[in-house]
Image (cartoon, rainbow, N blue to C red; front, side, top):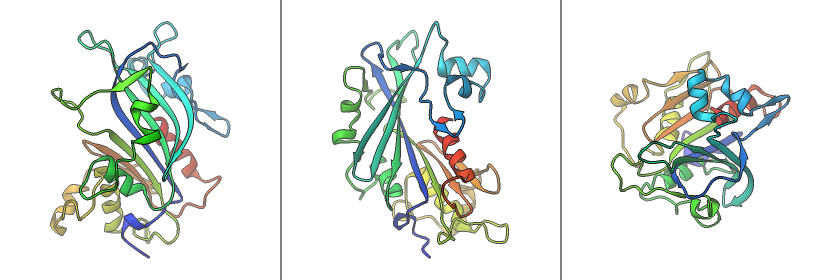
Length: 256
């Protein structure tokens, strides 16, 4: 058993990277969000619109007359990352009619989720930024959009990340024990959401309750934490794999 999240591999590990872009051409991709499938559940625009109020759904998915969301399935592997697809969301305003967001959907292999997050956040020392080479946004979005710089007022300096991790029976640091969560579970949640480790930010024991006090207990099975530059979802029971509830949880994380 280890409490070091940098050395463990979850049963399910996924990552969404959200970055601001400037649309350089009218998108020619398929209209609507990525329709990920799970059994009979098909997460197209019609399904996803039920998650939100009508006004929010129109802003996120547009209408048949005025689309604002496009998607493209992809299959690009580079290092520990497997790109499943990309979504584009137009966020036009009168001042910035070409602004938008790109969402890159990844699966992560091996004990690399936390270090990938640290690298995207440019922690020091950290591995080389994985959003390079074949996974560079400049390459993936060529001819349709380009990343916006981080020099404008209120710009996002680094992409926003959403991480999903489910444990196995050996990951007792994240598992409920006699119905209660160990303190290490919320530390793992904080590491994934903040893209950091104790080396990056040595935290006194007295401060951990404040750092993790806003964790959302979705159910006994999983928790979420939303921070300024990242969010995370963490399972709290052993994930047996195919056919388990966590398959739906991962789908929900990808599509919300």
